[in-house]
Image (cartoon, rainbow, N blue to C red; front, side, top):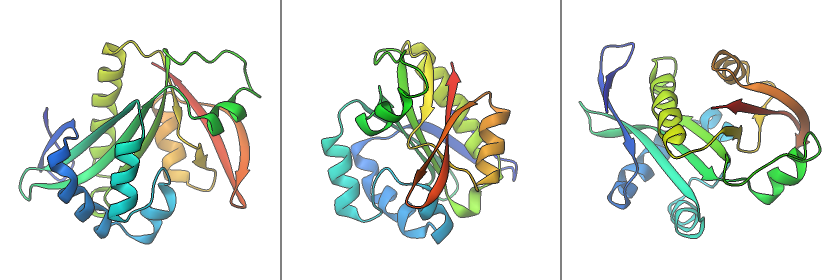
Length: 180
């Protein structure tokens, strides 16, 4: 799918393919400290990224590519179901979690492309795809850091609900869920 950013650049939204790995490594190399600090499903080095993608079943990966430069500018992971470390915590809020209905979501947008509408466009693209696949709910992968006001605002604006808080690595995090 082709869309336009707020800075009037054409962007392709699509699923990730194996031939995209080289571009993905370049995306991670360009990410600044804050972006790296906020995204935690895997490390940023080649070995970690490749091992994660090769060893994680039920993974759906989405990307946004700036058509002018052909570079990845956003990267989002969706995991079918819940990871055990999230599920154990989430079950303290509610016992109703169904692997076939629930998925876990982790987004990342390149520093230079944040606040340009790319995150919103890719999120809408992903939601539509997940609904088509039969998913009913989306939870944030490892929650969202409570001090990340921009992300919290984005999630609340898009209908996510806070369902609890927890501490990880001495940081307060919010668990959030979206009914698709």
